[in-house]
Image (tube, rainbow, N blue to C red; front, side):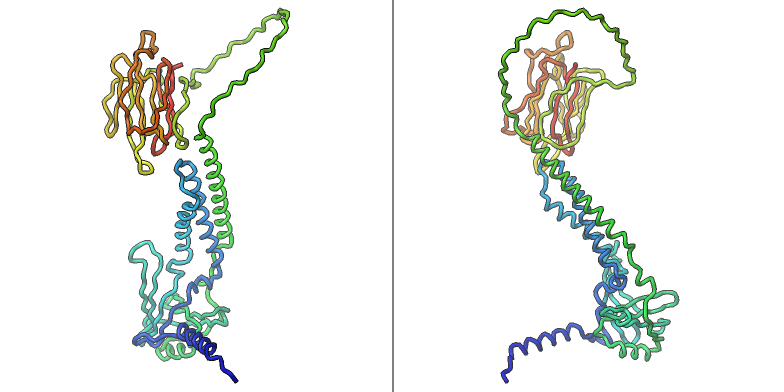
Amino acid sequence: MAIDWQALCCKEGIIGLKEFLTKPLGFGSAAFYWNEPTLYRIRLRGDGWLRLFVVLGAWALGTGVLWAMFANNIHRPGLGLGIGLGATVGGVAAVLSFFRRDHVSGRVRVEKTGIFRYRTYAGLSASGWAEWQEWPFDEIDGCRFVSDESLEKQFSVMVLAFGDDREIVGIPAAVDLAKLKQYLAGRNVPIKDVKGLSVEFTKKLPVAVGPIVLAVGLVSMISGFLFFQNARVENVAQQRPELPHQVEQVAPVIQAPVEPVNVAPVPVAPVSVPADVPQAIGRKLPEIGAAGGFAFESVDGQRRPVIGFHSSFGQWAGKQWIRHMEPFYEEEPALPNSDRVIAKPGYAVGGLLLDTPEFVNAYAVIFMRVTGDGKLDPADSYTSDWIGPKSDKAPQPLNGQGKAVIGVHGRAGAILNAVGLVLSD
């Protein structure tokens, strides 16, 4: 009969490798040495799926929140970055769910003087990441064994008693329990076989925790995705260049003369507006710039004309932009870490030139002479130097057409996204 030596060698090699990986290994003076089964404490509790739901829910929650945060950015990161950064939230949840001190396994040695275990786990301090435990035989009040058949698992456990304290140790199936019991009994350790474990080692997470966290995470993820997509469409629409307005020629409509009808006037009672109701101040010119940011408005309640601006600068995407633009209405010294532009005596702000390659990169102020009636004279004007680094893009004008400028409005966050003027009405 022919023998397939190649198949036989492969089979024998696999069997030999399995025996090498599963048999208990001697280590120095240790009578027994083994690695505890992976996550055996969670397997005893039987709530691994619940903990996995918590991890996935935390990942989805972090991803949804990040997508919602990305939505307001012009140079927004992609969805993939949100998923990747959201994984850090899931990673923290995984550490807390699976790798705390009460969940991890270790390396166990049984020597002539006692039982030793070394393990590492996730802790909050540098000293809390590693633990070396030593249990001398003469301090062990009792040792209870629960076999793999009783647990219906592929491993056994022993519970060591020290007065009112209990410590559980996982034992892989490759360890000979009979020899281990015999060895411990020879060291005067009280040995007892039991059928089950106490609640402290088998208590599960509440069943509702996993599904609730997962549901919250999915809702956050779906909401963040929809917010990201809708905000993206809105931002693209806001950045779309204006199309030239076409005026449709409409034929004049000829109406027949209508006989006048005498109608008695209807008396109308005067309407009074309470003094404490805030009234709108000024007329806003459309803002120029980019989408995003939070709306702001800075207007003088006395409707005084603006005579200058304080400006500070910020960095975004590796470039410098205007961060802040604050109007003032009377002579003021320059503020720390800011630039100041101010009108000559007898002049006030009448408009702006804005450099907006994406956001507000720089601006120049159009100053006009103040006339006797408080209006501005566009014929007598001058333009300031540029505040901020001017790009090659053609500037966009904001002109009040002789109306006094009493404030500014726009949108800003870490930098100034867009700005417009508020004119006196």
